[in-house]
Image (tube, rainbow, N blue to C red):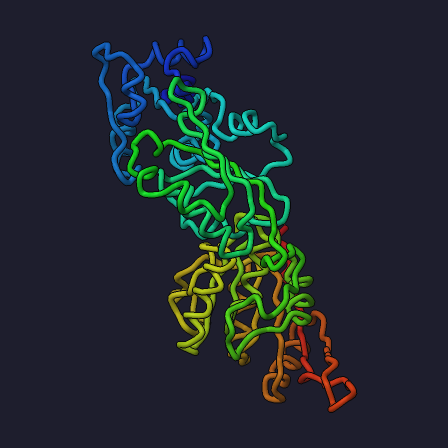
Length: 420
């Protein structure tokens, strides 16, 4: 017989505003008052009068505090977080460690909601991004003409970093508002434009500890020569790091249509070259990740540069340069989709099909006669779809123009059966 007490939450996750206890709802305050142990940061503990109850400060990394929480299961614990604990907050991490049955979550107003309210921006028309504990290049993935961004900062250096990325991409006229200590007695707002960011958010601004707790609102305004990307596959080739091995835009579009990126998908790019297919896959698969395999040592630097330029820190170079052939060599997540543009062989194809998750999609492009023979063999054995793709581009021929054909590509597409 199940123990009914097992399903009583012992962990209350309470969002608190800058005004401290006054910001809590009646239910949140009752959960805080009922707790035996409090867990939070020094900044939030300073907003709660010390009444003698045990206090545990978060360690770095957060996982170092996990044994303390586990050891206190027979007591009531209150974790005090900033704003909404599930909006890039500690509640999201806690849900990976404890089942929801063990938790009661009391959200407060998030920094996102407060910033949208200050700016007069509808939340559903505004993009939320965080640079707290993240690679700052991730901001580049959401910079687009007329986009409205709310960015959760790491500290007082973040506004200037955001301005640097905007300027680099040709968005120097974008409007910037930095809001500090939202909804608290020390709330301030600083307005400017990105091209003035270096002087606005300078060393004096960064040195002020009151500016560390800030959120940045950005109204993106593209300059005439700004780098403008589409979410549709097939962005211009010149936007990628220049490398001799790259799947060109037309072939990239056709491959991605069959790879069918979905939110959270894991993708492998085998013989990745510049990783242009992986880059555009990730721009369509929100929350996903990609791993590149390539024996060309020079390729890795171009892959890293493209990951930075497009703001995709979830593009990883796989531990193995070549696709592993055995299950015990697998050091990365199994894929939902695999693109093979190089390194084609019968063994690699069979390994790729084996590693694919049920329902996974496999696209292989062959240029040489030898690799085409391997695709034909796989097609006869497994079925799928076989295509031959020819592309010609107009080029000058003296005073006139003519079409110059590119090398013909043989493409094989195969999808693994779903499990019953």
